[in-house]
Each structure stands twice: as C-alpha cells, then as structure tokens.
Amino acid sequence: MDDCERRAAERRKCYLSARLFLNGKTSSLDAIVRNISLLGARLDADDLSIVPSEFDLLIHGGTAADTKHRARRIWVGSGHMGVAFEAVDALRGQHCALL
Image (cartoon, rainbow, N blue to C red; front, side, top):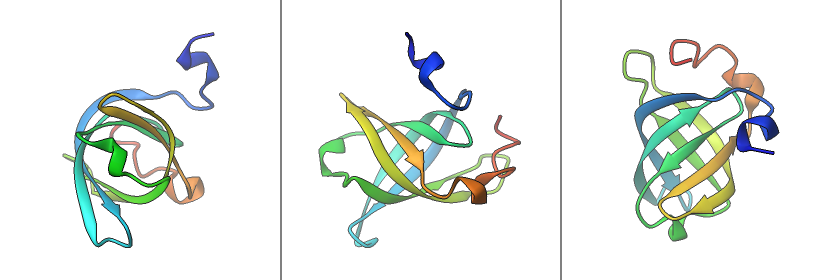
C-alpha cells in the first residue's frame, strides 16, 4: 500500500515557507512545506533532530493568509518530516486557496 492510500485526506503539492516554533517559542526553525492537506503536511528542513513531538507551525500563505497550527510529528526522514495538525476543525477552509 502506498502513502496516498493510507492518508485520510488528499495532499496537494506546494512550495510554501514555514517556521516551526519550538520549546515554548524560545527557538525556531525555518522549513518548506512540500505538500499539504486539511489534516497535515510534509515539511523539509535542516536538522529535524531538534524538533520535539509537538510544536507550533506558521505557514506563510503566499497569495493566501498565513496560517498557524499546532502540529504533531508523525514521521521523520533525512531532511523531511510528516506532521498532523492538532486542531483540524479550525483549519477547514483556511487552505482552500492552496488546494
């Protein structure tokens, strides 16, 4: 079974800048959102070993408004990470311009 079949929501490719806020927003890490859905996203960044299991994520919307999410790490690979958004109900409609 491939990744697409396991996902609860379809993800769309994108290239958006983002910032992960860690440790109570005392530190941050820049990232690129490579794909996104209403439920989560794939992030590319350097040194993902410093990212805790939960963090705040700010996605710069490009032509749409910036969005903030509480995110939970699902998997980590070399230079990329899959995350789930914690408050999915708050997201409905916010990324429609991106999808």
